Length: 223
Image (tube, rainbow, N blue to C red):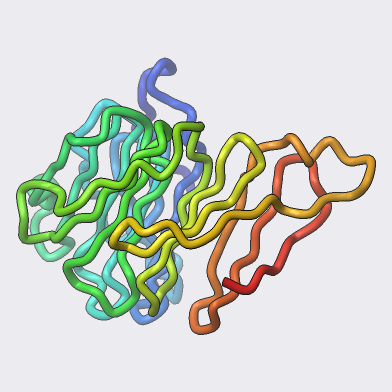
């Protein structure tokens, strides 16, 4: 599953980035390359190579899980681009936002949503978007620390961030702060000062899983 079309070394560091489209049986794959590759899981064949239209690496992908035509990519230079698979690969990019100024940690479109999008960048800035609009509809300064993770609940209007300071913070999408906690680690583990590197909401329950660097624990937390 080689990607090819590598970026220059100074624009790379994202590794492999993947978004799975369950309803379509397709995987969107990108990373330190100039294209987003669409794979059909059933036939194990690449069906499309879509130009990323950027010299920066792709750091995150999210897509409409209903029809699967629209997907969004976050980039290392802070750009967020919207693509439509129904168009020709060279013209599939239909919108670009450049309001973030740092590496996009994550972009997420809620399951069933066709317009609502949340993005977060390393400088702690979280933005809410409507795909029809040319500018973000809201900005939340979620932390002054480095934002390492951004997770969005699929059916509730909440999101969480993980920081370099071993902290997970939860917000309403209107920017209201809800809670914060530090993931549990072993007594002698250095993870108590380690950054949060993984977090995800349960798709239906108000429960979140998270973990820190160098830790052997996955914390399950009721929101």
